Every structure is written in structure tokens, then in C-alpha cells.
Image (cartoon, rainbow, N blue to C red):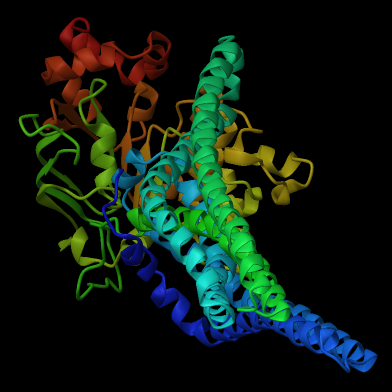
Length: 607
């Protein structure tokens, strides 16, 4: 991704965040400036000391007084440096924390479609590394760049007052520095952006490898994964070397030209002193001032590099912060005091945002109604749009045509908070969090105390997740990142319990029992039948035994609802339904037993 903002436009984006701490930053700036003034004052004391000490009648008292003044200036300089740090560190870290929190909040609000497009490592590097770079620039780079520039200006001014002829030599050396500095800004900004993007890609690779470590080991692909990582790491290393060389070349020029100017000034200065045009004290003061200015001049290179890196970090940060959130609350949200759970899909169309213009809709005119408290199984061949349809109910995606309503209210008329308290979801691809079993199950519930404990135990019982009580620390056991310390079936049961504990009006289940063994699935289905009496449920079924849980079945075909009826009715009248059922696991077909056999006898055999 590229960004065409100028340096000042990018840095100006920080102003709203920096504005509350400007007084502290100004105090830090004044302290840093005070330290520079103290450093520049010391050469002037030396000039007076040398001129007085070398003059006739000079006394030792002058030396002691000058030494005391130099000591005092040194102490003041150190004090100002310490105060600068005290003034800026706390407010700068506060700004960083607020920006990081705001970034995370925005990530939570952004659509699933956004997260489908962005690598997790890129987002992680923006949330951590980029914000850290911005904080360091605010607390140090910004202040020191201003102070360094002012120090150079003040130093050169003092040098002009001391000897304008010698000062002109230094000014002449600044011209090529300005020209080279402009070229450095362009090249360094480009390579800095490339480096930060590559670091984000590398972080994505590490994260994917850690999450997929079982797959890599199972297929013996650790070496290939390492080779890919080494290639990416080597590319980043080359970019960092290019970046370091650019800075090194600039630092060399910044250091070399002032040193050459200093050498030329020494020759000219000695000549002027010999002719009496410049006093010895003035000559010493000039070179002492030049030495005091040389440090800030050399420091400008790293400070500019930090500034350009901060610009890139700001641009990367706002690429995410300015991403549009297309799924938002209604202007005047509707609230249902006593929701029943009637769900209607009216001519629903959907296509993914990145689909080609001439591509067909994934969902092409879905018309379907679920009555309050009804359980409907959604069946169809792989790729017909079942899971996509389910993701529209909690508005993980928005319909691109038609509407979905709950109790006659368009989903887009609810606030997202209300909608997602009405709807609970359990996906086949289970996601758990690195926290306790208790916190994972109660994630969708606002209950506390005894009520929360009751819901927790009831949900675990229905989901047949009793194993949770036998974990090392019971329900307070931390289950590890993404729950990978548990088996697939255990993760699915915890996720199902989470959906149940939310006590939703509408429950959406995307084949949540696929990893369970036959006996466990049967017990779960018994529990769900008793629990779903007042909950409207839409369940994607990939097993005939799951179909038996439903009051009726909706058959999906090519993004449309092809037929709706009971399992027996569809077996009797729909060829495609018989094909779908026949394509399921033979072992699962056997489980239907006597419930399926009468319909089979009527038809003769499965098509």
C-alpha cells in the first residue's frame, strides 16, 4: 500500500492526539533548549577567561571564577536534560496507550471482510511497533529535532558575532548538506516503508506457522516452512542494510563537511589571529562553539531518519484507522422488548465485496421463513452458500439485496449490540480464547453471580462438556491459545456451550457437532431438543443425524432455497435432496434407522 501524504501532512495527523499534552511537551522542549543554551554558554566563558588571563594583570581569581561558572553551567545542563525526560515520558506513553486502545477498538468494529483481506502480522506490527515508533518520536525525536535545529541556528549566529569570516565557511558547507538532505528524505522514506511492511509480513508468517505447527509437523513441512521464512527474513535483512547504508552515507556527509569546514576555519583563523584581526579568546570561543554545534549537526541525520520512520508509521496506522466500517448501527435503532424470534429471509442476495463484476451472486434470491421456536436444518452440497447465509444473520456481512428480518424488523434497523444479543452463533471452525473455560463459555452472557454459575453449568451439560470440570483447575483452567490444548470435539462443545449460555432468541449453528463421536452427538441432540423449544434455530447440517434434530429442512441449491419440508417429505419428492442425503457418510445414514426406512420403502431406493 502506498501513501502520497507529505511529511507535514502525515505528522499533522498526530496533532489531535498530541494536543492534550502540548503544555508538557513545551516544558520538555524548553528544558532541552535550556540544556543547549548552557552548552553554548560554556565557550563564551572560555573566551572571557582566556582574554582576561592572558591580558596584563590577569589573576588566578579569574580562573577560579570561570571554573565555577563552567561547573554551574554543566550542572544546569544535566538538570535540564533530566527535567526534559520527566516532562515528556509520562504524557507520551499515555498518548501511545490511548492510540493503541483506539486502534484495537477500531479493529473490533471493522467488518469481517476487512479482516479477510489483512494479514494478522500486518495489524500486529501496526498496533505494537508503529505506535512505539510514534511515541518515541513524540517524546524524543520531535523535541530534539526542534532543539537541535535551534542549537545550530544559535551556534552559527554566535559564530557570526565572533568572526563573520570564519562563520561564512561553515555556512558554505551547509549548502551541499541541504541538497543531499532532500534526496535522503525521499529515498529513506521509501525504504523505511518497505522495511516496515516486510516486518509485518514476516510477523504474519511467524503467527501462521505457530498456529499451524501441528499441520507442519504432521506433513513434515517444517523444513519448507523454514526455507520460506529464511527467504523473507533475508529480504528484510537486505532492506534493513539498504536503509542503514542510506543513513550511514547521510551521516558521513553530515559529519565530513563540518569537519572540513572546521579545518579550513582553523587555517584562516590562525592567519586572522596572527594579523590581530581576531583575538586569541575569540578564536578559542569560535572553535569551542563550533565543537558544540558539531554534535547537533551530526545528530540531525538520525533524527531525520527517526522522523521519516515516524511518518511511515503514521501512514500505516491511518491506513487501518481510516478503513471504512460499512456495518454500523442504524441512525435510530429499533429495540424489541419481547422478541419472539420470527426470522424471514426476503429475496436475499449476497456477493462478496472482492467478487468480480461479472460473477454470479453467492446467494441469489433466498426466500425463507423460520417461525418463532422452530428448528430448521439447512442442507445442500458443498459450496451452495449455506455458511454464507448463516453469517448474514448476526451481520458479519450485510446483504447486497433484499432483507432479513427478526419479528418484522430489518436486521439493519437494530443496533449491533442488540442484534448480537438476540443472535448467538457456533461455527464449525471453532475459535476459543486464551482464558478460562468459564470466561469462554460466558463470553456472550451478561449474567453474574449465582445466575452466571447456573447458566454455565446448564450450557456445559447440554453441550456434553462435562470434561471441563475434570481439567486441572476445573472451569478456571486456562485452555491455551485458540483452545489448541483441547481436542477438536472438546473445542466444539465449549463453543456450543458458549452459544447456549448467551440465551439467544435466534441460534445459528454451522455444523457444530461435526467433530463429535456418534454417542456424544446423540446426547447433545437430546439436550438441544429440550433447550431449543423456545429458541428459533437455523442449523447447517452435514450429517443425517443432525437433520433429525430439526422440525423442518430447507434444501439449498446454487444459492437458492430449492425446497422446504420435513425430512421424510423431501426424501419422498425431491431428487436433489435424495442425492444430498446419499452423499453423506454411509455410517451416518445407518443411524437414521427406522425414521428413514419408511420413506426409502416408498421410493424404492435412494437416487
